[in-house]
Amino acid sequence: MQFHTNCCPRATCVLVLDMNQKDVARQTEEPAMRTDSRPGKSRRSPLQTLYKGDQQPELLAAQRSLQGRREHLEQGCLSHKRKRQVLSPEDLKHLIVDDKHGLIYCYVPKVACTNWKRVLMVLTSDGRYINPLAIPANEAHVAGNLRTLSEFSVPEINRRLRSYLKFIFVREPFERLVSAYRNKFTRSYNTAFHKRYGTKIIRRNRPDPEPEALEKGSDVSFPEFVQYLVDPRTQREEPFNEHWERVHSLCHPCLIHYDLVGKYETLEPDAQAVLELAGVQGTLQFPTSGKSTRTDGNMAARFFKHISPFYQKKLFNLYRMDFLLFNYSTPEYLRTR
Figure 1: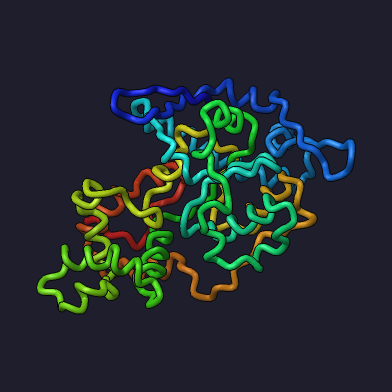
Figure 2 (figure 1 turned 90 degrees about the vertical axis):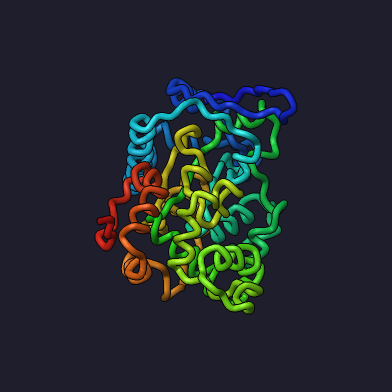
């Protein structure tokens, strides 16, 4: 895979990504050895470890599952091939870089990204952080605590894409969407979100709204949220917020070759496999969630019960590529006729 600069008149230079399957084979030939904590010692990078295939049997089994999803993703991309796409640095802002361990992680909101950011803060902090759960959630999202791929020059982007282990975690699209709605529109503390999006949604979709609703935007219903998402005006006015943007638009998986595709549904074993490849399994555990109200398929079904078949179909079409690329079946509760 290779980035090229392509400067256009009156525009900032952009990046164009060429996918080349030979690059995947070359990845393991790159000089990507990492220094071990012991003087004079070195070890393979996570990418080399993955493609050499001589790990412990239990680790290999977990990796086969993650790599199998990658292969499904590649087939899906081939089946839905689009014209060559131009990527700007803005398109790489979700790819977090860990130079110390040779990792690139594309974070997807509502897919355990807070905990992954905490883990990466521990990995990149040189001892400042030790326990991921000791890091406040809001601190994990502070810009500048972690470096993103968008911050590097084009040659440095190319080098990291060739030699680092690239991974992504995904989630059933509608469960992720309902989770985003619950978090951003039903929690009283999210006043900034209510003002930024709630007032706009109510003004556009609610007949004769109360003045207080127009001012605060704190009582957006799920049907109103769905109407806002499928309204063509929404994306014409501005890009989707990252919490409900499609994964394929956030992480560009048909242009960037992810070595591992983890899933929220199998978060713990998948995260453990990544940490083992990074060589930190003995010193760092991925935080487990203690939430008892996690958004699952049953909860999503309850929310969709109030959405008409017409809007269910439009919403499914909006998120169709995420269902296809990441091998999620159409929900049984969906009514599109």
